[in-house]
Length: 64
Image (tube, rainbow, N blue to C red; front, side, top):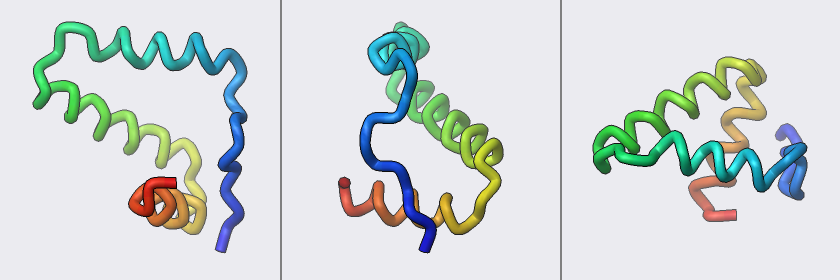
């Protein structure tokens, strides 16, 4: 399995989090969920490594 980076690894993590929250401002639950789904698909496509994506899904499902 691919080793995922599970420790903080985002430059400007606080800014990223604020940007993510701002993107959801004013959205209904349905629209917010749709935004999250689109974001996941865009990022998965960017990563492109099928093994890494599968491991990320499993890790997220376990709540780690």
